[in-house]
Image (cartoon, rainbow, N blue to C red; front, side, top):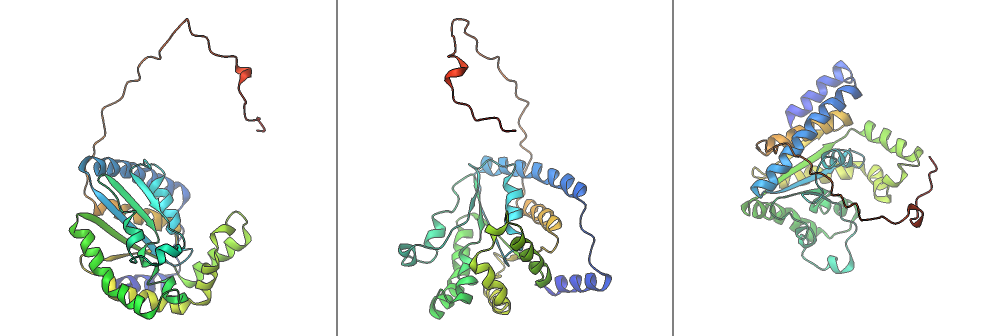
Length: 276
């Protein structure tokens, strides 16, 4: 976190926490940004751009929420989400970046990574899922890997969602007591609370090695979910200059008619029972 960002948070602490963004204001601004996302999508398709956006951060920091708001209005054939699970035994024997390379975008696509190759610098490092040698090699090779992507004309954007200890605790408690959110808590998430300091050290070491000029980390203050979503989407739009390619109005053709065709009786079909 930059000194400027830390100073801003200190000022907020002195003046008390900011009021939460009102839902009406949030929804109004989100609608505007989502319209711009559709315009960006058309530009990416038209220009054949290849865009990769990484979302990293503490557990319960709000990465999934902003990804959902980005993808809501977009064509899944153009914008897709990659959220890889535990590597298979075969994948463990591959070059570390290999399984991520398979999901990189083709021309006219944008890929959002819900966690990425930075797993090695975070959970794998803290939980001991990789050796010291593998970890050290990752920190050395990751900047070169990303420079290689950039030289291949891939637009790479990296976001780190920063959440305070107190806010993460509140969100964890909410997930524990709400059965519809319980699935969001994995054993690794619980371990992240028990190893807060270790994760902080790992994050700081990761930033030191990989916050490079060509591919910087952008930190999102995520204590307020609504502001975090709007700020992140607005920033993403600003990083990819695009033009409005809104097409001309469409005119629906008349429906085809065939007086001689008779459809089968409706009773021949099996309908879902109407419980509501």
